[in-house]
Each structure stands twice: as C-alpha cells, then as structure tokens.
Length: 521
Image (cartoon, rainbow, N blue to C red; front, side, top):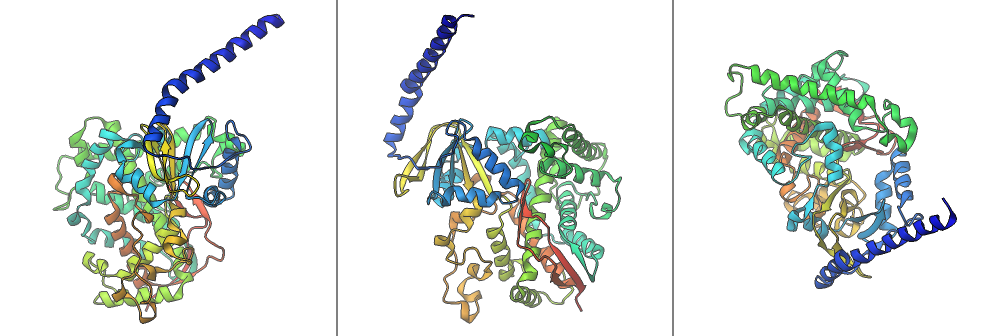
C-alpha cells in the first residue's frame, strides 16, 4: 500500500470522526445544552487525570488503594482535593459524578427515583455470581421481588425473638470462655447465615454446627461465596496478575458459582418434595414457599434465594464485627450498655423481648454510631436512565443544579457523607453514641448538645423506594446478639491496630474482631 493510499485512508477516517462529532453536536449535544440551560445548570468542579483521554491513572490508583486497604480514603480524596461535595470526572470515556451532598442523595434515591437505575455494569457483574434477584434487577422485576419479600418482614414476623435466641445460644455455647483470643468475624457470619435461613426458609442450614466439618455442603457454600466476592483474596489464582487478573478467565470462580447454585438448588428441591407444611411455625410467612407459588422458573427462584442469603449473611455479620471491634476500646460505653441491659431485663440471663430491645436507646445509639463511622456499603452508585439533574454542586460555590446526561454514573460516597463535620460536628471522626440521644436520655453533662437530626446524611440502609426491606429485622437481630453477648461475657479487646478496611460485597475490619471472652458471673 503506497503513501498516497495511507494518506487517503487517514483523511477519510478523520472526516468520519469530524462528521460524527458534528452530528452529535447538532442532535444530542444541542438537546443536552438546551436541557441544561432550562434547568439553570452549571458544571461542577472536575477531577482531572494525568491521562485526559481515558483516565487510566484513576483505575491504577483505585487498584493500588484496594491492595493497600485504603480505597475509602482514596475515594474521599477525590472530593477533598477539589474542596467540593460534588465533582465530575471522566473515566474510560464515561462520565462519572461523585457526591456526598445529602440533597443530591435524596434526589437520586427518592425524589427522582425513576430517573435512575442501579446500573447495568453492577447488574451484569453481580448476576454472574448470584443471578437476577432483588439486588440485581430494576423496574418491574425488582418491584415483583420486593412484593414477594415484603410480608416476611412485617412486625409480627420480626418480633418473635425465640428464633434469635435458639441460634445465639448455640453461638455462645461454641465460643471459648477462658479468655483465649477468638476472632468473632467467622462465628458471626455463621450465626447470621443460620438465622436468615430459618427466618426465610423455615429451617436453618446449621452453619454454626458445621464450622469444623470440612466436607459439609454449608462449609463449601460459604467458602465458595467468600471466593466469589473477594477478587483480591490470596486464594484467587488470578490475583498474581494484579489489576489485569480481574479481566482474565477464572475457572475457580465458575466452580464456586456452581457450588453455590447446587447448594440452593438442593434447598429448593427439598421444599418441592416436601408433602406437608406441618413443620412450618404458626403465623410465619416464609419466603421460599411464597416464591415457589409465584414462579415455576427454578433458576429465578434460585437467584432470588441467593440474593437474600448473601445479603442476610454479610451485612449483618459486618455490622456485628465492627461493633465488637470498637466495643472493648470504649470501657465507658461498655459499662453503660451493660447497665442499660440490666435495667430493661428482669434477670441477667433473661433473653430480651422485641419490646425490651426497642427501649434500649443507648444500644441503638451505639449501633447507629458504628454504622455511621463504618457503613457496610461505603460507596454506592446509580446510572441515569435519561437526561436529568442534581439539585446542588454546580458553579463556583456549588449551589447551582448539575446536568447529568443519560448513561452517566453517580457515585454517592456514604462514608464521606457520614463523616461531614458541618453536619456531625468537629468530632465527626470519633465514636460518640451520645450524639443520637434525645435530651431526656442524656446524662446531665451531655444535655447541652442538641439531638442529632441528620436526615439524608445518614443512610446505613440506603433510602427511598429501595431502602433495605429487612432493616427492622437486621437491627433487631444485631441488638439481640449484642445483648446476649454482654449478658454472657466480660469482653476484652485483643485488636491493637486501627480499624482497616476490607471491601468485598460489604466492608468490615480487615482483621475481624479479636476479643477475649470470660463468662460473666
């Protein structure tokens, strides 16, 4: 091919690129400018990269931060480096917004809920592991999943704490009480798995009783799930390839997904083969029978069940792990919790009722504060389904609306939002449960401070139509387990280092919660 032929090809390609750009400006570009002008939008501050075309240094920086367990700090720096609560940037040719503004969060999750999707990339990534269910679907599919699940979490279902007592008592029996160091993270995962499986299915998978049985189906499921949700795990054979490994074929991942599917398929088969529901507790609405009455699609049923088992295990155990990481570090908080528990229960060994738990305001304040500092989902995102706006973030002072084009992603940084000093005060990075108490519940030396009303600046369970449907059950479960642990044990901290993030599907302390337990007299 001669010089003139190459030149002709180059000129032709250049003309095509220019023509495409002109067409975009006359159609999409013109429409977007008119939309932005009508709504009084101004551009937000922009995060710029050394690579202005693709922003590859954003990806490499994110990967490095993940490996060093400081990705939350890295994300927050995008905002703090620009002295803004809302910014825009370009990564891999796509438009991305990052915000920790509560008004923007309210708009994304509630006010303009219909303008946003959870995002096709997220749906594709999670669906490859847990299928299409309530957390990996949008629109009518998502609404149908939620409608099936809603009756399971009505108050009369959640208020029966006898289910919680059976499994928590088993946990307490399995924990060493001689003061030897134990990491509570794995036992909490098994406990949460047992509780959520019985709550939704009518029978437990007995994860606690199979912790030491290497060949158990439950152990295989849990190990497979851990592998699938932690691409940085040392067990992951692709980890040695660094960031590239995330895009390489992973045969072990496929095997783990298959094991997870087989485990749930067996649960479904047992339900279908059961000739009677006589073992179903009275006045209980179980998820699996309701699901199977709605669909004959067993793959769909498996996916819905996987979605719920995954969420029920990981989110609850992550909160509990973070709670018991912090609790031994604060003797005053520890003593006040023990005192409150004793004041609301008739005897030191009495399991608390649902109504008694609701009266333990300091316990709830402590849980709120741990969730504020360590949200189990530290950052979340939505994708714009059409051209839309955010109410704040544009212009030099960040008060003008911001135009969001169709297809753009908006990440709302929950950790940064939960630690804003202009909302939570100068001690926003400290654990202070008292900030959540009403005046009547505070000690005399605390009553000068006004009770906190953060609104959309506190979203541990998300918000709007997609707010966590099981939050009341999750909080009841967490409060019950904390009460029973404090009734049973004196707790000594064995973690010397600071809290260090470990991000998988949820976020918890890298080292778990190492404690020494001694039976309380």
